Image (cartoon, rainbow, N blue to C red; front, side, top):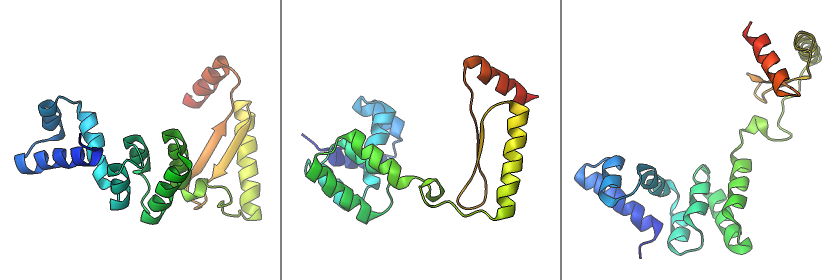
Length: 168
Protein backbone atom coordinates (compact mmCIF):
# COMPACT_ATOMS: atom_id res chain seq x y z
CA UNK A 1 0.00 0.00 0.00
CA UNK A 2 1.72 3.20 -1.22
CA UNK A 3 1.18 6.54 0.48
CA UNK A 4 0.25 9.63 -1.61
CA UNK A 5 3.84 10.94 -1.71
CA UNK A 6 5.15 7.61 -3.04
CA UNK A 7 2.42 7.58 -5.68
CA UNK A 8 3.31 11.15 -6.68
CA UNK A 9 7.01 10.24 -6.91
CA UNK A 10 6.09 7.27 -9.09
CA UNK A 11 4.09 9.49 -11.45
CA UNK A 12 6.94 12.02 -11.56
CA UNK A 13 9.43 9.23 -12.36
CA UNK A 14 7.24 7.96 -15.23
CA UNK A 15 7.11 11.48 -16.62
CA UNK A 16 10.84 12.12 -16.25
CA UNK A 17 12.23 8.76 -17.35
CA UNK A 18 9.70 7.89 -20.04
CA UNK A 19 8.98 11.39 -21.29
CA UNK A 20 5.27 11.05 -20.53
CA UNK A 21 2.78 13.85 -20.00
CA UNK A 22 0.28 13.88 -17.14
CA UNK A 23 -2.32 12.73 -19.66
CA UNK A 24 -0.12 9.78 -20.74
CA UNK A 25 0.52 8.77 -17.13
CA UNK A 26 -3.21 8.98 -16.37
CA UNK A 27 -4.01 6.66 -19.30
CA UNK A 28 -1.32 4.16 -18.26
CA UNK A 29 -2.43 3.97 -14.62
CA UNK A 30 -6.17 4.20 -15.30
CA UNK A 31 -6.76 7.52 -13.53
CA UNK A 32 -8.08 10.92 -14.56
CA UNK A 33 -5.47 13.50 -15.55
CA UNK A 34 -6.69 15.74 -12.71
CA UNK A 35 -6.01 12.94 -10.21
CA UNK A 36 -2.44 12.59 -11.49
CA UNK A 37 -2.03 16.40 -11.35
CA UNK A 38 -3.30 16.49 -7.75
CA UNK A 39 -0.79 13.83 -6.69
CA UNK A 40 2.04 15.69 -8.44
CA UNK A 41 1.10 18.94 -6.69
CA UNK A 42 1.91 17.24 -3.38
CA UNK A 43 5.57 17.27 -4.42
CA UNK A 44 5.55 21.09 -4.20
CA UNK A 45 4.97 20.85 -0.44
CA UNK A 46 7.94 21.18 1.93
CA UNK A 47 9.53 17.96 3.24
CA UNK A 48 7.91 18.34 6.69
CA UNK A 49 4.40 18.25 5.16
CA UNK A 50 5.34 15.37 2.84
CA UNK A 51 6.62 13.49 5.91
CA UNK A 52 3.33 14.15 7.73
CA UNK A 53 1.49 12.76 4.72
CA UNK A 54 3.76 9.69 4.58
CA UNK A 55 3.36 9.10 8.32
CA UNK A 56 -0.43 9.41 8.20
CA UNK A 57 -0.53 12.56 10.36
CA UNK A 58 -2.63 14.24 7.67
CA UNK A 59 -4.67 13.14 4.68
CA UNK A 60 -4.15 14.01 1.05
CA UNK A 61 -7.04 16.50 1.40
CA UNK A 62 -5.26 18.26 4.28
CA UNK A 63 -2.01 18.37 2.31
CA UNK A 64 -3.66 19.70 -0.85
CA UNK A 65 -5.32 22.44 1.20
CA UNK A 66 -1.86 23.53 2.42
CA UNK A 67 -0.34 23.94 -1.07
CA UNK A 68 -1.03 27.72 -1.36
CA UNK A 69 1.02 28.43 1.78
CA UNK A 70 4.53 29.54 0.86
CA UNK A 71 6.11 29.84 4.32
CA UNK A 72 7.60 26.60 5.68
CA UNK A 73 7.24 27.76 9.29
CA UNK A 74 3.50 28.27 8.75
CA UNK A 75 3.33 24.79 7.21
CA UNK A 76 5.00 23.38 10.33
CA UNK A 77 2.64 25.19 12.72
CA UNK A 78 -0.43 24.17 10.76
CA UNK A 79 0.77 20.55 10.62
CA UNK A 80 1.17 20.57 14.42
CA UNK A 81 -2.31 22.08 14.82
CA UNK A 82 -3.84 19.44 12.53
CA UNK A 83 -2.28 16.69 14.66
CA UNK A 84 -3.10 18.33 18.00
CA UNK A 85 -6.69 19.38 17.27
CA UNK A 86 -7.60 16.73 14.70
CA UNK A 87 -8.71 19.46 12.26
CA UNK A 88 -10.97 18.51 9.36
CA UNK A 89 -9.96 19.26 5.77
CA UNK A 90 -12.60 22.04 5.69
CA UNK A 91 -11.12 23.64 8.82
CA UNK A 92 -7.64 23.55 7.26
CA UNK A 93 -8.98 25.08 4.02
CA UNK A 94 -10.58 27.89 6.03
CA UNK A 95 -7.32 28.61 7.90
CA UNK A 96 -5.33 28.57 4.65
CA UNK A 97 -7.78 30.99 2.98
CA UNK A 98 -7.35 33.34 5.93
CA UNK A 99 -3.54 33.05 5.81
CA UNK A 100 -3.24 33.52 2.05
CA UNK A 101 -5.68 36.41 1.64
CA UNK A 102 -3.97 39.39 -0.01
CA UNK A 103 -2.70 41.82 2.63
CA UNK A 104 -5.04 44.63 1.58
CA UNK A 105 -8.07 42.37 2.20
CA UNK A 106 -7.05 41.56 5.77
CA UNK A 107 -8.72 43.52 8.55
CA UNK A 108 -6.69 46.46 9.81
CA UNK A 109 -4.45 46.80 6.75
CA UNK A 110 -6.37 49.50 4.89
CA UNK A 111 -4.34 52.56 4.00
CA UNK A 112 -5.63 55.75 5.67
CA UNK A 113 -7.19 58.11 3.14
CA UNK A 114 -6.48 61.83 3.15
CA UNK A 115 -9.40 64.20 3.74
CA UNK A 116 -9.49 65.15 0.04
CA UNK A 117 -9.46 61.45 -0.97
CA UNK A 118 -12.34 60.78 1.43
CA UNK A 119 -14.36 63.66 -0.04
CA UNK A 120 -13.67 62.50 -3.61
CA UNK A 121 -14.65 58.93 -2.70
CA UNK A 122 -17.90 60.17 -1.12
CA UNK A 123 -18.65 62.29 -4.21
CA UNK A 124 -18.10 59.29 -6.51
CA UNK A 125 -20.16 57.01 -4.24
CA UNK A 126 -23.05 59.49 -4.20
CA UNK A 127 -22.84 59.92 -7.98
CA UNK A 128 -23.01 56.16 -8.61
CA UNK A 129 -25.83 55.80 -6.04
CA UNK A 130 -27.86 58.52 -7.83
CA UNK A 131 -27.30 56.92 -11.24
CA UNK A 132 -28.06 53.34 -10.13
CA UNK A 133 -30.65 53.95 -7.44
CA UNK A 134 -29.02 51.41 -5.13
CA UNK A 135 -26.61 51.18 -2.21
CA UNK A 136 -22.97 51.57 -3.32
CA UNK A 137 -19.65 50.92 -1.59
CA UNK A 138 -16.30 51.91 -3.08
CA UNK A 139 -13.45 50.06 -1.38
CA UNK A 140 -9.92 51.12 -2.31
CA UNK A 141 -7.21 48.46 -1.96
CA UNK A 142 -4.68 48.75 0.84
CA UNK A 143 -1.95 49.55 -1.69
CA UNK A 144 -3.79 52.60 -3.02
CA UNK A 145 -3.89 51.06 -6.50
CA UNK A 146 -7.25 49.68 -7.61
CA UNK A 147 -10.06 48.48 -5.41
CA UNK A 148 -13.67 47.30 -5.62
CA UNK A 149 -17.05 48.86 -6.28
CA UNK A 150 -19.96 46.99 -4.69
CA UNK A 151 -23.55 47.52 -5.84
CA UNK A 152 -26.41 46.00 -3.86
CA UNK A 153 -29.44 44.53 -5.58
CA UNK A 154 -32.60 43.25 -3.99
CA UNK A 155 -34.15 40.93 -6.58
CA UNK A 156 -33.33 39.25 -9.88
CA UNK A 157 -35.21 42.03 -11.67
CA UNK A 158 -33.12 44.63 -9.83
CA UNK A 159 -29.94 42.80 -10.89
CA UNK A 160 -31.09 42.75 -14.51
CA UNK A 161 -31.87 46.48 -14.29
CA UNK A 162 -28.35 47.20 -12.97
CA UNK A 163 -26.71 45.05 -15.66
CA UNK A 164 -28.75 46.86 -18.32
CA UNK A 165 -27.79 50.23 -16.84
CA UNK A 166 -24.09 49.30 -16.77
CA UNK A 167 -24.10 48.06 -20.36
CA UNK A 168 -25.52 51.31 -21.76
